[in-house]
Length: 639
Picture (cartoon, rainbow, N blue to C red):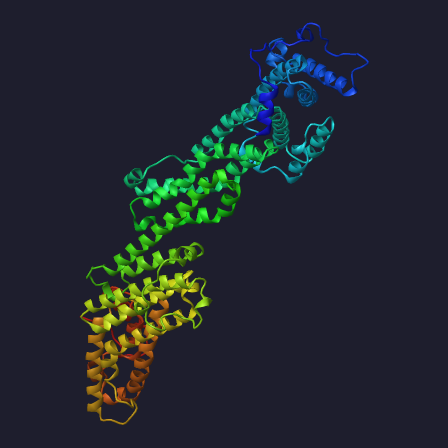
């Protein structure tokens, strides 16, 4: 860079110069300031700048002053610190003028020795400010600085008293911590600009990098992010891995909000005078910690796949994608492209992991070989597990849109026509995602249909289908799957539930329904009435004995089926009983023929599908019958 070239031109020396400088150390025969009339005004100003700088630098030279060795200019006397910077800047201007006149003049060599001592002093001050203000210059404090402070006090260039005034005005409305932080940042900036201008950028940058990199590395470690390999991940218990990922998720949030943001703000501020320096400096400080942070998801994604990891993988994908604007902004330099690339690589690997896990999940559902029947035709555990999984998956619809966008769909022939709801697929937030989730639901339904064949009683197989499809529809209705599959999907599958329930009802109860004549109030002989009552008793008992262990977990579906059976059976039975019950002879004869009055039938039907123990059924029936006004009602227990 040009400034480095100027430094090599102006400040090279063949011998080590002492850091004890005074006016007496001028070469023999020269005075610190000449008053020769023939000297030009600019020449006199050069000598005055050298004289002022020599006086100020000597005062704060630790080699000549014990006080200077243990005291900080910037902490002891802020106004004098401003003056020190001004003197050094004026000395720099004077040296540039001397170079243009005579690059070998004794005044230039003398000025160079003063400048070396000044830079040594500023190095010390720079280090002290950075190290003593670690708490006030932590990334969180820096990242929350007010815009007013950023625009005013922190940009002061220490041009006299105005800097103090601006800091004081801004300080009226900010906290003490912010004031200290702002003043420290302003001090660092003024020192950095002075050293860079004088050609001592390297010394300044090295100090900054060592201290600030340690803060970033320590921050990453405190956030729980440690270097780990795929083999270590594979050996971890799921609980341990969950904790690691949880720590990482919190680390991303904090690091992007404060750690890297604050460091970028500080670095941009301190080295505002040079785009190249602030870029390279920030890159060197942040690179290792950021690569460790954004490399962790890739390692997890490459490790052994398991369905339990899916949602944590999606959490990591969400964390990176949601913070991508900040990642792209904070690490926008060419020198930090490796960090952006690592974050992008992790997104790609996480995408591959999600699709791989879902393929395994689909295969697991398809290959489920359990032949055990669910008691009473209830909801199969596979249905519960699968729908819980898919409903949770639908909660990640925002990121799944990106993940499924470029992932191939199942073959079109594998999805039945009219399986989807809308005539316009663009109504879905993501057709690819909707098709993928709909396909997984269809795989489950096909598997449930296959498992229904294990029931010997066909009526129970239809009840099994109704129960499982109702559970699927309910999970869709009450989760984000509703927005992905659509209302029409729900309507169509609700209709299928009703059809399955109707098939169950017909196969299970049609024999009971058919015991009565088409017109239950038509005139018939007492013998015909007795035969119909006896047929009803046998059919009802046989059917109830088979169906009493059937279950319908869904309250609404259970009531719908019971009401449908009651509506078809009780109305006919009540009419027949009221018309023909009194024609059977005496009370004793009636008790032999009519085992159930309508209220008893109603009580038994109301207890269906609840898996109520036999004793409870009998007790319930007894309680109901004992409260009836009919003298010939009695309890009957199924054998």
